[in-house]
Image 1 (cartoon, helix red, strand yellow):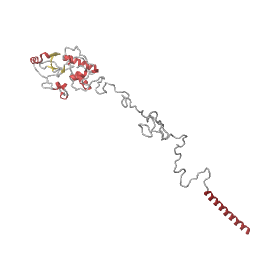
Image 2 (cartoon, helix red, strand yellow):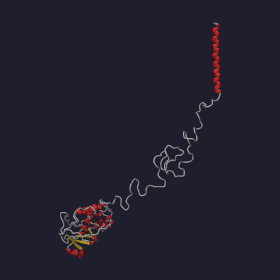
Image 3 (cartoon, helix red, strand yellow):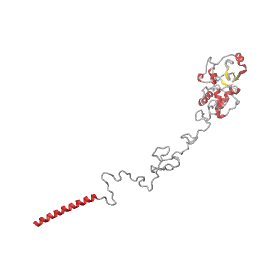
Image 4 (cartoon, one colour):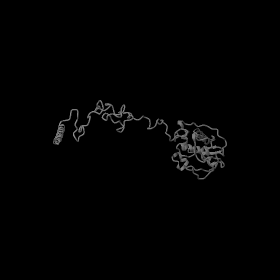
Length: 316
């Protein structure tokens, strides 16, 4: 029994002694520096604290990027090819004319402006010498007042007109004392003064001969007198005379009224405004064609043969 007790005590002392030795070993290891090849990390500080990893060298790149030298030195920005996407921020320059961070496409070439003569978004420049849209007729010819058709002057022609008027096509108008041409007060300019001031006059044959004897002509048997460059009906010269229109008719190239009307009909026919017969009658169909032409060409819609309309047609 005593021997067993002694053995127990010896075993206990041996364990205590072994534990003490292990405790001393641990303290010695803590006092020693880190073994070669190992980096001890002081508590509370991450590895490499205070010094960024790989300063001066891009991580994972075999050669350092050229610091201080921009890509393509000596060339203006944007010339040649734009800096490729994904290159180091040190060597990449922001493309001219594009916000930073975009590298697709090509920068506009330095020293070159947009193509001369081409409007933005257009494929072709406007044709020189031709108006764009406004003032062009349906036939594609210019129609600004005071210009000639396609730049040419139409020579007057003599037309064989019927000897008797077609009253079904152009009914006779009647004399109206003190009448004024409707709408003429809105026609501005000296070229329309004769229309604004026009009112029909009724006089007998002797009166007309006494005032305009040498300037009276007959059209379809009806007398017309010339005054201020316009032909007008001589009402009362022949009480039953036929007139298709009561108003001034521009005296174009010293032609009688029927030939002036026939030349206007021909000019309008060539441009597609008049499809009727060239008969020298200023009836409703001819007047409607004149009004259409005037409207399409920015002229006062007189529906009459006036000087601005003949100038626009290239006749005067």
